[in-house]
Image (cartoon, rainbow, N blue to C red; front, side, top):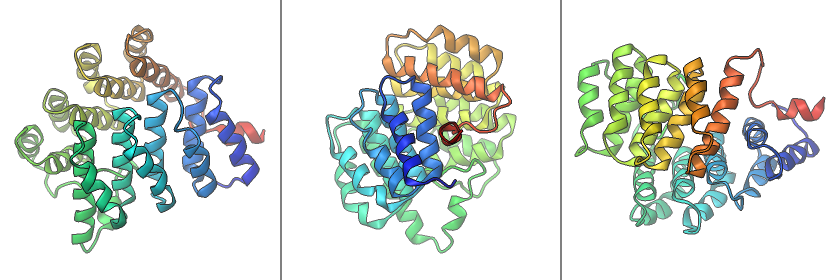
Length: 302
């Protein structure tokens, strides 16, 4: 996507304007992600003092998906900042793994022992990802996700759903291997593999279950809706998991998903409420004739 400096700053003003609806700010963020470059990174960096943990988490996610080493200093600062919410720090660690530069290994090792479990586990995964890239001669195979995403772990070379399900649900197994099974099951995209993934919503840490919800959102298959709904409705569940279930329902975007999400617009947890707002915007997009979700550049240029 081509944009000049003035346009990037204008999009950045939308992103950083706390008086604008959250859904507009999200669309601005994804527009900046698609544009890329140092100007876009700078506009995203400016937003990490926002009050919305959901938005800041998404800022870190987008910086990782951009895979630009220029974002590393920003992400390291966020990871190190104990005042940032755990879900934001976790996403910064995952983004450093997505960029995949070996120079971040020392900071990832340091924070792989963080007292916050979600942060420590994420840094452990990021270390495993970078090590996997180093040891494999054809790392480009890692990047060929059918969902155009930079994943935290490469898929396994297997089509055995039952074997993959066993790896996925083994809470004593390596988290990296469980993630590899997760992305393999996602890529198989059969009813059987999706139902195996749904079982993962009840098996493991908050970090693991939130990633399960994320891949179910990527799949956009209606068979997952009852399982995502059950986790969203469970107020004892970690807010990271519930928020990701809400966003996954927004991606699936059936009439039932609209109904469920509207029920939780006044949830006690801010991150869940805000996720429902964003998810409903995604529902509307999925059911509309809009050409592009990240459309802020077009709106500014018009």
